[in-house]
Length: 281
Length: 281
Picture 1 (cartoon, rainbow over the protein chains, first blue to last red):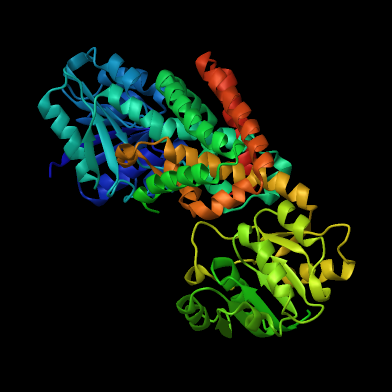
Picture 2 (picture 1 turned 120 degrees about the horizontal axis):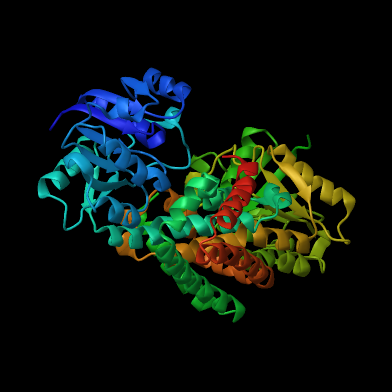
């Protein structure tokens, strides 16, 4: 397993903090430097064992990095990666953890200064909790990380980023940025909108009459509104298409209900159950 | 706290089994008799401590009951209650745990033989697990049970059923059967359809690309298709209205997305989050 000399993590929240903890716990980096905006939060990350050192100065934080992992909101990843490419090691690698890939990779695939190369990543891990205190060294174990190389990506760089995630315990899948965004629109982004609409359609006065079903179905709606706004707009077309397909599925249930068609409704529920059961828990 | 001489539980699954365990653990009944269709399942319920004795014979099971709790699918509650009223103690009380109330109560409010009275109940507890092995004595602790008296319900009967549920640790709310069904359409039945449609709209090949968000949002879709078909059809009009309101909420998200309107989208997400956060966990 390749071990890194210095890894810089830009943004030490749930994902960035977990990357740091996993790297340090597994002895995969000699030094993990955290870059953030809040000195208090960086101090907390040091105390939690997520990073060796923290700094609010990007240039200083990445100065010796041979790998930079940008764990920032999707709206900031391009600018941060361009900025860090100016001041990290010549020839360093950069990756990210953004939940959409097409817009980000299209920008960064145009090339970065000083021989720096970017390979996009998206770990399908996390949840609705946020911040370094929610981070764990096990967050990526057994989870899938999608990496999104392009025709310009060198095979060695792709393999280095894949090995990085496998080193943290993850499984790695390779998709084009466009494939990634199409798929995630269906499996993550549209479900988020549906969950939010379900919460929004529930008058607060009726919350005492909800049970575990409603609580589960709307849990992702507790996510950060700003982050999700940026994320959804960065994958707008695919998300709208996925919502349209969801609407079609919903309309089939409504048709069966309106027609009082017990066997059609039961078949629809049974088909949906099969998909859900295939996932497990 | 009133203690019952003999309580019969018709249907010893998750809810019925939990009623029995809680009654016995709390010493609220001298005898708990379970009535079911499967001798093996009744035997399991005895071994789990949910009931003192089990029988597949309804008449025999309810013969000495002063309270009968019908824990059957909504489609069977009316027929079972009418049948048990023929053979339980004269003047016994009956209640149920059905997730819809209007159709059931309308039938049973017409009167039952031999001085038997019915007061409808719906404990907002449970989950996607089923069967007596999922039952626990704590299932109702701190949970809400809605009881649905009518203008024909005697105050003493309403209070006896309320006291029964409070004895199991639940809080009790009183709604008319119609109010109950309107509210539950929004808080439970429409969310079930939405979750099922979300699962149905996801090609099985994409399941490896789901994360905790999709798993949470679709969890209730793993519910029994037959039970949910009956339940949804027994509250058809209200469910269709609640789905229509959900569609309107979803359309507002789609409009903001289609217009690339970041501030409108963020406001919608933020409003949805406030509703979800008001529930907690």
